[in-house]
Length: 238
Image (cartoon, rainbow, N blue to C red):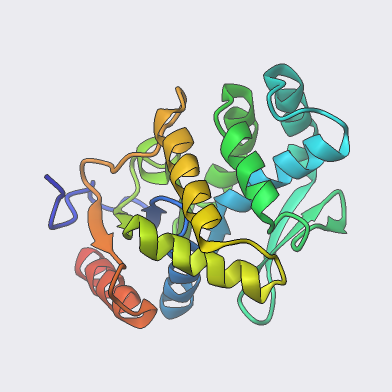
């Protein structure tokens, strides 16, 4: 049964670490950005890191199924990856000084991220970046395994989800807005396939942490979801 309250450890950092996990299309990126803005916290987009590994692997001619070489790519590029926030609040990603923010935000790179994130070496290569950014707290991290693997001691954990059809519709609208021609049926199939890969991967699979608050965004506005989360964070930090 999902928890209806936060039962994480007593905060030991100056400000809490907030972990937001959940499947693709649940609205994690938007909610995480707005929650970070609301609280004055730093946003760490962990999914962008895995997309960067997929992008760099493909650029170097390394197949995503080639685990050993993908892991080498991750180790190679990890020191050069830089996440920053633009004036509009979006996360920008630089790889060895080059802005790859737009290049990694494609359906293909989403698939690649889902594949390469299953490799132990890739996760280890990126773990330090994520943990270093959150050492002093005051951060919001979103991904698939933040509350279960990256920061199991996070003071606040959420599992944000939504119905498959709702997530597919949101994703479909995003793709059409970017000029990507794809059907809703294809998008739904892709969402379900990615869910399956994320749940079944042997390393840090997608699952709700036992002390995470379940939040369903299916029939709710982003503002309502952020309000609920902010209230729960305030309850922990008061």
